[in-house]
Length: 150
Ligand SMILES: [Ca+2]
Ligand SMILES: [Ca+2]
Image (cartoon, rainbow, N blue to C red; front, side, top):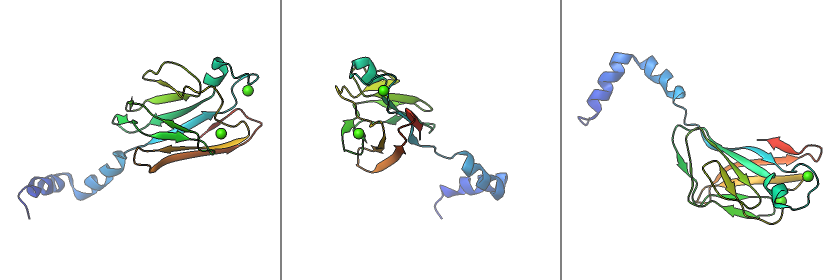
C-alpha cells in the first residue's frame, strides 16, 4: 500500500463506510444536454432574421463546472452542422443557439444561417463533443406544436 492512501483510509474509518458510499450520489456529475428545441418560430416563416432567430435550441450545463464547447457540433437530421466557436458554458447555465444571425454572448449563440434548420414537422438534434462522440440527442415528430422539451 502506498503511503498516500493512508489518510483516505483514516478518513473512511472516521466517517464510516456507509456515509462515504451515500455521499457519492450527491456528487452526481450532471451533464451538458439539450433541453428544448423551438422548431417552428412564431408566425409565418418568412425567413426574416427575427423569425430565424426565434427558432432555436437550448443546451444546459447541469454539472458543477464550466464546460468548453469549442469544436462541439449541433446537427439536424439532414446533417446541417453548426460548429461551436470558442465558448464556455458556465456551471448551471443554459445557452440558446439561434438559427439566424446575431452577436454571440455568454447566453446566446447564433448559427448565422439565412434559412431554417429545424424542420416544422420532425427532426433530430444531435450534440457531439469535439471528439465526435455523441453527447446528447433530441428528436421530435409533432407538427401540431411549435417546440419540444428534450
Ligand atoms: Ca412559424
Ligand atoms: Ca432540418
